[in-house]
Length: 285
Ligand SMILES: [Zn+2]
Image (tube, rainbow, N blue to C red):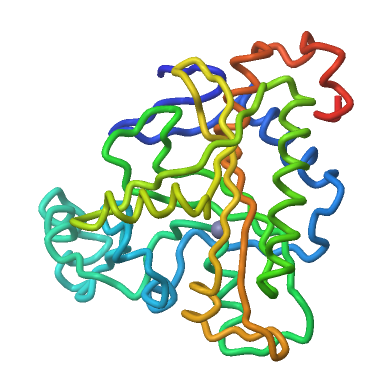
């Protein structure tokens, strides 16, 4: 069993977690909850989501390589019954799998847009959403996990209220990561769009700075631990969400909790009790 900082590598590129990782993840969850301005409303997004929800977004067109669907056995009689379990039955199970109505959630905020779908808000809506996400990454290592816990602060309102949200969290998270002595840099993001338009979409994302990432140093080089995303009216249109009589827009502040924990362990060491005094008030020790 290979372990490193509490990452326990399983077969075929999956990971389980133990100490010190679990303790640091818990510290981060509580530190984020203490930040000034955290939305009071909390939502837990389950790890599977209806494919009809994801089909309302541009995710399947932009990132089909990362999306994973859940398959189920449509005809259970193919494998016999529990009393006649055999290797043949296991092979029949695999051969009989067919797409179900579920996909693995690629980002926690989609559950929030689904929650608000086809509605009119009287005022901007904010929430603090957590969920396990999955992306079908071509390589799975401890810094590019296929399965990870994502926390997001989501804002749905007007273009102006979204701009205020983005400015606020950009400053707030820069100082949070600086207080943790992770030396953050805020850089425009270029997502791995799929297909012929990939370069064009990535360039337009860079130019518009619609997504920025908070990058810190880790053992394998710069690591994005959080991102701030301005969706404009794309998601509110796709989900038919209105805010009063104004044009509606949305934005989210997202954290990859495992990456944040990993960078803390790399910078400050795996013995939490010997972390520098200067970061203790922020991390809550
Ligand atoms: Zn989001």
